[in-house]
Length: 83
Image (cartoon, rainbow, N blue to C red; front, side, top):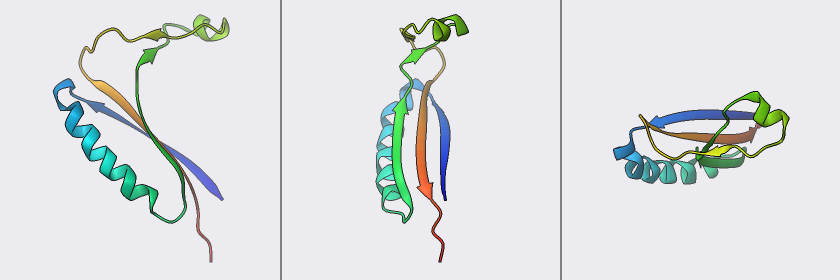
């Protein structure tokens, strides 16, 4: 049986390099754990203004500035190990 997990991180703009270095090591450690199928760290670079954008199949708008924080998502899929 498989499961998916999404973790959202908000990082202060002056701490992004430190966060990315820590997460690079963490991702490498998590990948070797038994049952890990995929693992991706993604930085948010676009936003969707409204549902009409989605309904019309339009591209989301690119972020042009950082206001309070930089957002990251860690997407992980794994399978349960059963005996």
